Length: 93
Image (tube, rainbow, N blue to C red; front, side, top):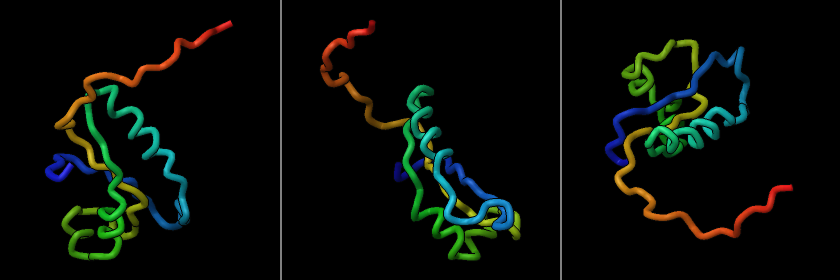
C-alpha cells in the first residue's frame, strides 16, 4: 500500500466525537473493501501525523475545528490470494 491512491479519513469535531472513539467504521470498511476488489490498510501513523503536523492538516484542507480519528488507505491490491485455506464443510441443522 506504499503508493496507495486513496486515503479515507474519519474526522469530526472533538465536541461531537470525544476520544477514545471505537474504530467500528474502519473495521467494517476493511471487511467490505475486498468485496469490491480493493485492498486496504489502517493508517494509524497517517492520522496521528495529520493531528500532530499542522502543515499536513492544512494541505488536506480539513476544517480547522475538526480532528482526525482514523484513516484507511485504499487501493487495488497488487497480490491476490490464489486459493482459500481448506476447511471442513459446515453442518447446518
